[in-house]
Amino acid sequence: MSSLWEYLIIALALLVVIVGGAVVLLHGRGGRTKELPGRESTPQGTRPPGAGGGAGTDDDGGVATLPRPGPTTVEPEAPVEPTTLPEPEPTPTLERPEAAAGRLQRLRARLARSNTALGKGLLALLSRGELDEEAWEEVEDTLLTSDLGVEATTELVDSLRTQVKVEGTRDEATVRRWLRSDLLTLVDPSMDRSVAASRVGTRPAVVMVVGVNGTGKTTTVGKLARVLVAEDKDVVLGAADTFRAAAADQLETWGARVGVPTVRSDRDGADPASVAFDAVRTGIEVEADVVLIDTAGRLHTKVGLMDELGKVKRVVEKQSPIDEVLLVLDATTGQNGLRQAEVFSEVVGITGVVLTKLDGTAKGGIVVAIQRKLGVPVKLVGLGEGPDDLAPFDPEAFVDAIVG
Image (cartoon, helix red, strand yellow):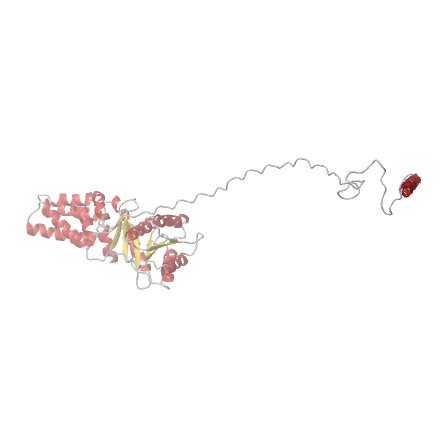
């Protein structure tokens, strides 16, 4: 057995020698290993960055050590500014107009001051000890100066002369009572002074407001809207004054203050009849109680402009009757306003009168003259610049303000 192990050990030693010699022989040829086709050789000792025996290994077949990545620099995010929402526009506070019922009573003192010359002048004359013809002429002059008109003045003087002759008394209280009674008869409290402002069947009432330039027509429409809103009416405004650039803006401002919509054109100089037609159509659609149509001021002597006013009325009447045509007159114009009233009445058929600036004149007699000339009542009076200084005309309060 021992000899057998000796032979095996010798054989293994020879095998190791033979293999080692073969390896030395192979490396000794040319000094390099045979390269595989298609692969470039790389000089020993050099290696381009990233080269190796394969992805993830080194040249000796070991696991390659990848370079440690450098520290990553994270750019700080820019601070996000909070989104600022626009502040909502404050909801305008709607005004609650003063009730119209007591306005003329509240403004009676103002009216009385404006008519002091008429009332006190007459009382002073009539209370004289002797009323001769010269005194009666002074009474007539005072009445004519107040724009009462010749016919009404003659009637009033004749009535007073008769009462003085019959009664034979001239004390101030008695004369005041006579004067009040006769003036009230001339003003005629029996006339219907209501303004059409309630729905008629399935449509709104339609009110058209006309007048010459400078009478305060647009302002009057705005104030009238306040009167009606105070009576809980649903109102629509129509800005058919398309010639004056600021008229529609002015009317829209009046309406916005009390929550009333305004129908207007987007351009200046638009057809006023078209705007008026649209306003009435809107009033029908929203089931309003009344539509107020503001028209452009025009001189009664301008035939073309008056014809255009007639066209506005005709166009509106194609879809709805016009229930009211209010003529705005400046009380300070006196008798000159009568001719204006006549022409407007011929063209559009006046149904009522609004007297503005009545607080600025002692010519209260114009009320009687206008009513007699047109056969229509004074329905509203303007007694100041305030938004609620338009009042329904009250004949008794008016006469009381004159005679004191």
